Image 1 (tube, rainbow, N blue to C red):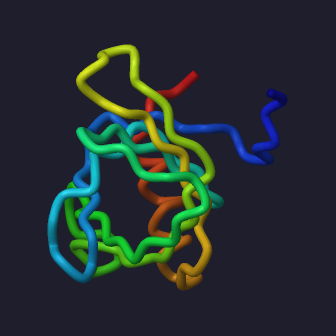
Image 2 (cartoon, rainbow, N blue to C red):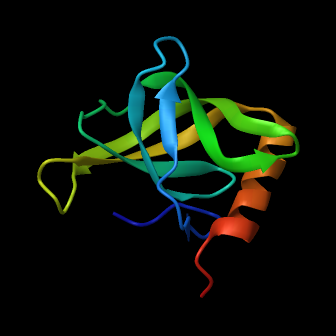
Length: 114
């Protein structure tokens, strides 16, 4: 399957917590992120083509915010290398431009350099 991603994935030095905005339950931990989407690791699978309303807790306040909110579309879900978990790819479906800017800051300040 060819990689259709336009932006290079960036691995963040923290496993940031991503929660369901309605239930406040943990959806998963951030593995990598771009301004267009993200990959989480989760104990539970999420069917592709599912829309979710999520929020991500930031490692520190960025632009005076401790979390960002967004809607995502599940692109794929597969067992992780660790069979107790699932890797899940999401595309951002609805996200404020100011939160995209926070993701850019997050990538710049907290990602591994290559």
